[in-house]
Amino acid sequence: MTEEKKIPYKIYLEESEMPRQWYNVRADMKDKPAPLLNPKTLQPMTFEELQPVFCDELVRQELDDTTAYFDIPQEILDFYKMYRPSPLVRAYCLEKELDTPAKIYYKFEGNNTSGSHKLNSAIAQAYYAKQQGLKGVTTETGAGQWGTALSMACAYLGLDCEVYMVKCSYEQKPFRREVMRTYGANVTPSPSEKTQVGRDILAKYPGTSGSLGCAISEAVEAASVKEGYRYVLGSVLNQVMLHQSIIGLETKAALDKYDIKPDIIIGCAGGGSNLGGLISPFVGEMLRGEADYQLIAVEPKSCPSLTRGKFAYDYCDTGMVCPLAKMYTLGSGFIPSSSHAGGLRYHGMSPTLSKLFDDKYMEARSVEQTSVFAAAQQFAKVEGILPAPESSHAIRVAIDEAMKCKETGEEKTIVFGLTGTGYFDMMSYAKFNDGIMSDYIPSDEDLAKGFASLPGIDL
Image 1 (cartoon, rainbow, N blue to C red):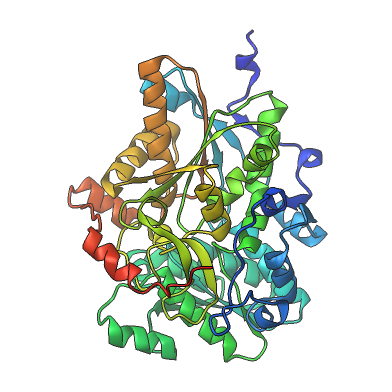
Image 2 (image 1 turned 180 degrees about the vertical axis):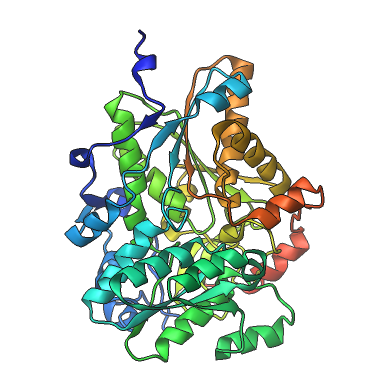
């Protein structure tokens, strides 16, 4: 029996092999990401300034760029045991379908009620809110996976949960919002009439389908006017990247267990939580000069923050009530088209990932949604999992890279993140199957409108 045949289809870690700490990639970055800025003073945000918005411990994690590892509290570790470790799967059937010499692995994060990786950070943020004695939290959600995860975490810990869901996803994915409501969450389509910022956005953009930037503005305002509430975010922020590092730490431990060294690591990119979580320990090795990998971020052509955006300070939300972050952005005023990958419809990218991208530690590609759904269908037919539209961006490029290996004869090892299931996305799949799905690619003129909203801060 060859060594390769000893590798199981699904690699699981034993409980004793599970990571017990989160990894903070910023600690190994010589050039740190630029700090969040107070929009009024343009000075770096302090603990005291962020404290009214976020839980105290999460503020500490957000601002800490020197501590490499954070211990995971035992209560969170116990919760993780319900669905972690998640499997690292060898896609033998996909390899056979493609007739490629490439070896393809995917880290599957869809084996929990939320159907995605989002629960990894949701339980952490809800835990710190509970420890602080808060009554509840507010948040936004795009595709609904983050809102679902947070609703579950809050129900588990006995916290109130208010979710502002991007309007087009609220309408496209009614069953996702019903899962949130089943867990006790209050779900509002955004932009809404419930907040001042929502009313302002509706007045400026009548009939808008919304965006994550809009929903963030509403959730922040809602938290600020309710006693005993704080705002929590499912992507973009450093604290979320920290919690999601559990994905990459498990992936690396599973690969190391069988002496597998990946050549290419691929993740879909919206705000950056999945991609950042997956690549963190690998890019850490690159930063320390211990190894080298090809890291690929995949985003939709309809919302191309890395591939066509500008690296600049910008507001994190459409209502311009949040701190300024230096990131690759299309401008907080950019309202993306109502694509079916709702979780990737954010105007900017994580400041940490933006800095890594600008420093050439990873590359970025953008793909059309029809090609994404074609890849999702191909994957589903042979691997038996119906993937979420967001995750399918990574599948698209993984297949493309595997086909390059077929052309060149190279036996590269490809790892990608499969971060969600698509069983609540059947309206999207129906449009693809009916041949009525279209591709929207913003023109330079469209992007210019978003760039016009940039505050023009050069620090």
